[in-house]
Image 1: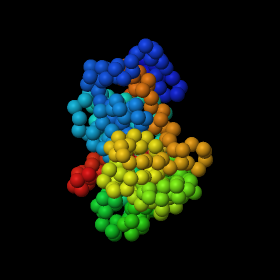
Image 2: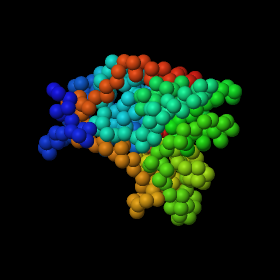
Image 3: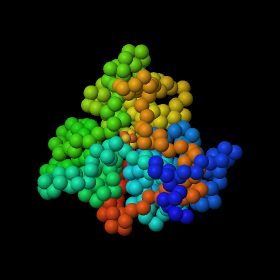
Image 4: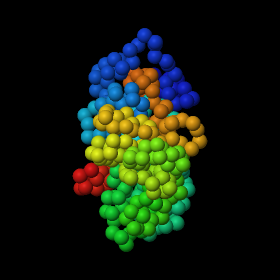
Length: 331
Ligand code: 13P
Ligand code: SF4
C-alpha cells in the first residue's frame, strides 16, 4: 500500500467509511484484532473519549506510551503528542488520524529561530513545554507539561539560568509563582489567548458562586481572576474535590465531558472566546480527529508517525528526564 496514494492533501485517509459500517463496533473490533490502543486527550470530542482506552493530559499520554503492551498506539490528539508517543515507544506503530492536527503553540517556536536564541545564551539550560516539535526537543535539556512545570523548574538550583519555551503565559505564571527569573520564549496558544476577560466576568455576575478554573496557557489577566490554575487533569481533580457546585471552565471545552461525568450534580460553564458568539472555545486542531478518521486509521494503519532514529535518540533524553523527575514527585 503506497502511503501517498492513501492520504489526501489534508493529511488523512481519503476513503470515507461505508454508511452501513457501525463505526464504534468496528473500531472496537479492529483494536482488539490488532492489539491497538486509543489514547485520547481531554480536548477530544465526547464520542472519541467514550471509545478511548486511555484519556489524559499530555503527561499521562506520555506515561501511557512508555508503559503499555500494545503493538499499535493511535493518538487521538495533536501531532506533538503522537511524536512524543513515538519517541517513547519507537518500536511500536504510532498513528494519528489526521496529520494536520497540529498546535498553534508548537508552531510559534520554529527550530531555526529557537536554535539562534539558545546559541545566544550558552550559559542557560533549556526547559521546553511538551507542546513543541520533536526537533525543538532535540535542543532541550528537560521537557515539561503543565502538570509538572513547577517541579521541573525547581529541579534546578536557583543559580541555574533557564530558557523556558515556548509558552509565554505558562512561563510567566511559573516564573511569578516560583519567584524565579527565566528567559521566556514569546510563543502562545491561539485557543487559550482568545478567552474573553469581559465575557468571563459577565458569567461570574450570572453565577456569583461559581469558581473560575483556568489553564496556565491563558493570559495573565484571565489567570489573575481565576480561583484555580492548573493542567487539564488538575482542573478535573479540583472540580471533583472542591465543595463549589458551579465552575466556569477556562480551557478547551472538551474537558467538560469528563468533568460532567465525574460530578453529574455540579454545573460546568465553558468560558467563551472574544471573537465569536460561540459559548465555548474549541481547538480546531484537536477537533480534526473524528470517529470516521479513527476507523480508517485503524483499518489501514495510516497515517503513521515516522521519525529518524537520530531525532528519536536526541529528543528522548529530555522527555525521559521529565518522566523521571515527575516520578520522584509522585506525578
Ligand atoms: P494539558 O497537558 O494540561 O492537558 O495541556 C495540553 C494542551 O495542549 C493545552 O492546550
Ligand atoms: Fe495547541 Fe492550544 Fe490546541 Fe493545546 S489548545 S493543542 S496548545 S493549539
